[in-house]
Image 1: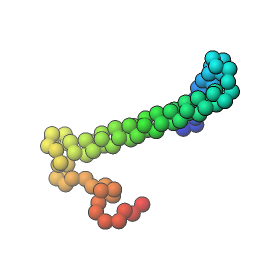
Image 2 (image 1 turned 90 degrees about the horizontal axis):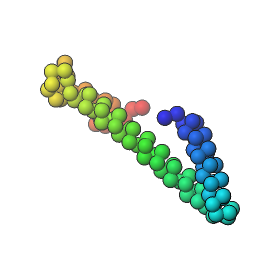
Image 3 (image 1 turned 90 degrees about the vertical axis):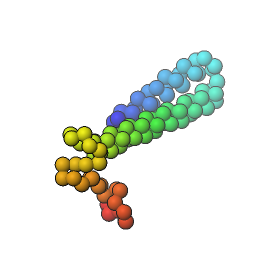
Image 4 (image 1 turned 30 degrees about the vertical axis):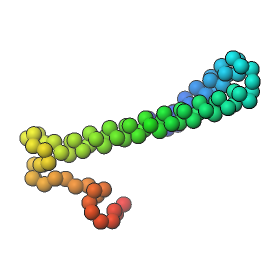
Length: 94
């Protein structure tokens, strides 16, 4: 997901939502409140979508690291389980 495109799309959707809300109820205050609530819901949905994509990618990465062409879990061609710097014990060196 490309960030700027998401924000431009979100602003466009909020503008259409605000115009429709104002046309339906005629109250500027009510339109503002409902548009802010809509913006919050869009942000929560975007956040959950990104979390899901990260979770799915991490889950697939673990599966690829565990499964081998020989079909034995936990073994690689060299016989050792690959370890990344993020799951080594001790301090993390970025």
